[in-house]
Image (tube, rainbow, N blue to C red; front, side):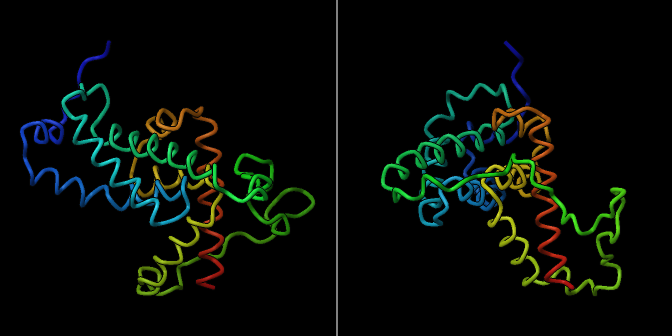
Length: 205
């Protein structure tokens, strides 16, 4: 068995430090909610998932041995709770919903093929954002566009981009959390980032 990871957050929580718990909530609650949304879709249900995940963390803390970071452990609980909730919700989904496809791992081109010539080279590259005022790029409305673009992604792409670019996990951590290969993690993240960038291009154009 591997050695326990030195984690100040875990030690503070086990010592009953309420301020440490509040700090964790401030840091992780938003990313946890967005991750839960990738599984259950409905914000209200996602809020329930996150609340249940926090309760599970508190109740299970004494059994947490620190074989992974506290952050990885917490997000793993979110994924497990969300998947369980999705299975329960699926029992009452409309019959037609079973024909909806999640094509995140399909071979659809990530970038519009009209941007390439017959030789496979770029005919028109991604437009530069150098002339766009920084105030517009950083505006709340732009941030909302990014969030909307992420929410519009297929679930498998959405969970990867949320874990990588919102929650800040390393590639290996994401692969372990989701039980996928490093190659699949890279492909899903690439497709997700390309789709989000395309949505931003159209908004900022």
